[in-house]
View 1 (tube, rainbow, N blue to C red):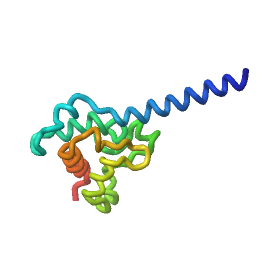
View 2: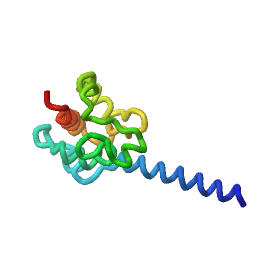
View 3: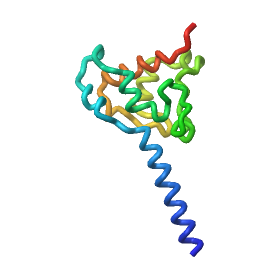
View 4: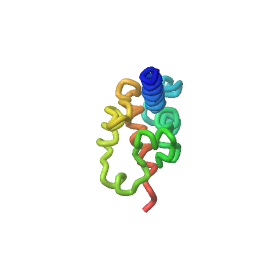
Length: 126
């Protein structure tokens, strides 16, 4: 009986963890709608809210429950902003470092570039 309870508990924890991580990978209607837009027409703030804010927070600080659980990057960190290239940000969005989901097959190249530029707006003012 104890083994069954332990197994049910572990399955619940595991499925809950998968559910929480999958929340970071959601792609909504804006993502689909803007897939073929030119870069200057993409609502990067909306894309961020739709695909990234669950973990990184609307303000990029990763002060969310999901962000805490998965160890999401604080995008406002001055050292990270200074040390990270645009190419590295684009690659991270495409391939998903650590537990972050990969967005290469979910977002168009122009959407990914727009998101990378938007991430730079979290850079603290000099």
